Image 1 (cartoon, rainbow, N blue to C red):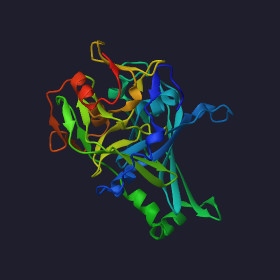
Image 2: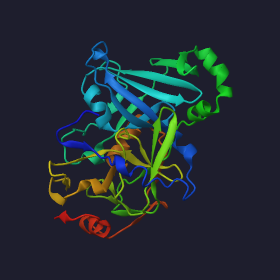
Image 3: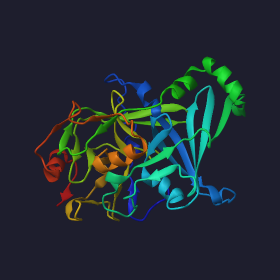
Image 4: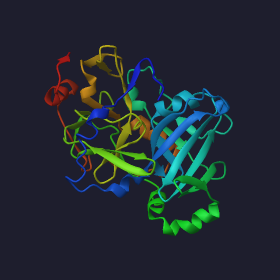
Length: 331
């Protein structure tokens, strides 16, 4: 992703292997196949050697809709800029990719209206939608032969699909259920969270070793201690172990000394962390972001966080951070 002056993608690449506890509890790996690789670029700069390409992840939440982080698509697609989003729908024995073209006259990328990269509450509104219209998109089909991808026709792809179980499995997943935190108080999440990543058809995932995950209503996002993700996970899903979607991997504000300040709706600073890298923050689905998504996808599948996923807590933000603190903090 392009570096933004006031934003740092929340990543801790060194801990990826350290926290990967894939066999400790049953994980529904098949549920994470809704996660897809995406690439985004300015369509009008496609012939330029200086074309920036933004690599992210997205989650398929409907047969024709994908959810990602707003900061993944904002640089190329903001305003009336024409952009192209390439989604890798499946990559196994064969590969299917599709290019979605967005323009002012034919919108297919929808960024949450209140999103702006420099704002203080980015983690609560860092969501965007990508609409796949099969009639306007461009599909490509390839098969792996002699150590390279070879182009095949759509008809050949369909005929060979039954002999390609990995490709078929990735195409079979079409939607996921979202966990709503709309109008809930501070809550303690009852399940461990899982952050998957799809890379060239290979699924890997990081499991939070703790259950100290909280949703902070005043900040409208989740926080978990000592847990991070690698660059390239932006826009991907934060799931429960059973495959329900709790949020989207986002970003946070930072300063040159590595601290991060968290502010409420009125801009009042609630807390400043000296070492923000010890905390994983991610966007949940609050009232405003859910309404944004539902305006485009009326049949969205959701479940309240209070229906077995989380329990209310009387702790405020400061006491929550104190209880899970692993580093010195400056209040």
